[in-house]
Structure formats: C-alpha cells, structure tokens
Image 1 (tube, rainbow, N blue to C red):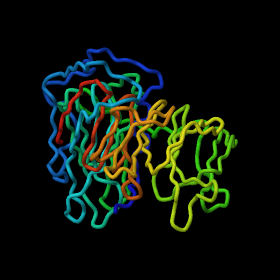
Image 2: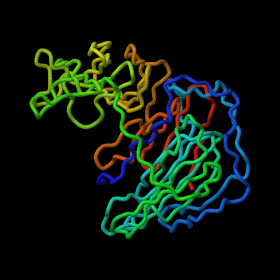
Image 3: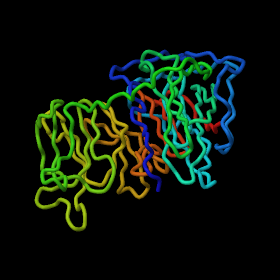
Image 4: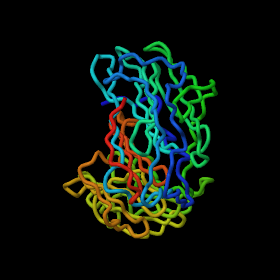
Length: 391
C-alpha cells in the first residue's frame, strides 16, 4: 500500500467542463498543427527511470477527425467502449522494482494531454526524479512526447473553453531525499516546446456545490444524518433517516439540481449496528430542501463523474461488478450505459489517492488506474477505439 503522495490531483479537470450545452462542428480539425521537426527545448532526455525509456518525438503531420454527431460538451451517455486506452511507462522505484507512475490526464483542444511521473513522496532508498508529458490527437496519434529528469505537474493558464494554446508544466527537482524545488515553464500544446519561466499557478480553489450536501456528526463520533448547508454555513435541512454507510469512499456527489447519496437506512432501527449496515440505499435529493426525489435499495459505490442529469455508479450487489449510468432525475438506469469487467470510474483511497481517479471534462470522461488511462467519448462521436502505448 502506498503512502499518500504529497501532491494530489486536485483541480484535475477544473475549468474544462461547461454548464452550457455546446455542439462542436461535425468536422473537427485539431486546433494545433504539428511541426515536422523537433521543437527546441531545454528539457534533457529523462534518465532510464521509465520502462520503457522515454524518448521525445513530434508528429510530422497535422491531425483531422470527423466525429459522426459532433462533440457534446455536457456529460451524458458515452460510447460503449473507451476511445483511447493509454498505457503509460512504469517507473523504477528506489528498490529497483517496477512500479506504477503517478498518472495525469487533461483535455486539451484537439485531444488529450497525459503525464507520467515519479512521486514526490520521500522513499528510502530514494528514487531518481523523472517525468513525461505527451499530447494525443483525437485520431489516436501521438502529437508529441517530452521527457524530463524532474517530477512533472500540469496547471492551466487559461480556461479550457477559451481554447488555450499553452499550459504550464511545473517541474520539481532537488536532492533525491530532500526538499523539492518547483519551477513552472510555459508549455506549447502545438509541439511541446518550453517557453518562458512563469510563476507556479495555484490549483483552482475547491468550489463546493451550493447548497452543499454532506453527512454530519451530531455526537462527534459517528455520522448519523445528512444535511444541506448554504454557502455561508447556514444549515437548510437535516435528514436522520439515513446514515453514513461505513467503510471508505465517496458517499455524496452533487450536480446543481440533484445530489446522489449512498447510505444506510436508520428509520425503525435499521441503521449501522455491530454487524454493519443491514439496509443499504441509493437516493437522489433536492439539495435545496432535502426532499428525497427517488430511492433504490441495494449497495452502490459512487463515482465523481456526475453532472446535471447523469451520474455513474457501481452496483456492488451485481456479481459482475457492473458500472451503470443513471438518470439523476429518476434514479433509473440509462439504456445501453453499463460496463462490466473494466478498471472502473472510482477514486482510490488512502495510498491509492492520485493513482486511481475519474473525472469528466464536458462530455469526455477520463479515468486513470495506475499505468492505464482510459478516455471515454460521448455516444456516437466515433472516436477510436485506439490502444496507445507511451512513450
């Protein structure tokens, strides 16, 4: 079990989505044009920390793609299989053993950007520092790859809906077992070349939905109720018929109009007891007044992939471990939107934080599971499927 990395993936897809539905033209052309020669960069080729080794490249020809029905910019039904399955190189840890890299994935104009990095967590013996950044076009071809002998993080300089042409790559260096010094450089999305040094951008601040729905701790020990809270902290409503289900995971996810909650029924003494929860439930709440809009019996886990109208949940009671997309207005399954035998859309816990997660950027869902990243596109888009091994 890994220890939690010092830096997490907070703000992974912040700013990428849009609450306003938008259709991109049926003929999407990459907003960047790849050069035919490697771009000038001061980043040296990374030492052999990655397996396979990292090698820089730049695509020689521009990319174009024609999704069949355009690219929906709000989260909703997905194609039945991922458009991209991206395998990242593994990293050699301080003990000389192959290990999972710390993965990163972001939506960019014309494609996706992925990163692989050694962790900034101290280990003994300490590992070497290394990072990789790669852009992949919507046609499944690698736009460019850049290699570093430093830890890498990616930060936005401008919101995604402003069609950025640059990002900031944050490079961490220092002694293997000492403090890490971070420096930010402007990174071109066209060819991966490095520009001027810039201030390290802050992660976008966490913005809870308002009203915020959360379990509360009236006795200071066990969460045995749910509440809705306004932005100023005012409690708008409480519901003691449901308790936190116990265990680890995400118990509440919210769009602007519906909060999806997993819990344990408490009415009639059916709550958590010595043997755990006897009556699991999945509910949809109106976050403004606490009205229960719908309810489903059974054990479910929640993904953070949720937006107005839809959410992805895991049916734990299904022996096949099936992920489902549900309609958040009714709680019912969305026809044709179920997935079995996949790495899933869940977030890791404890030492897995930062290595396992799923987010959506508009209509695109990105799920990371260690050294594998899957990218899911809106239903009918016609992108992929492509299997891509980096570097």
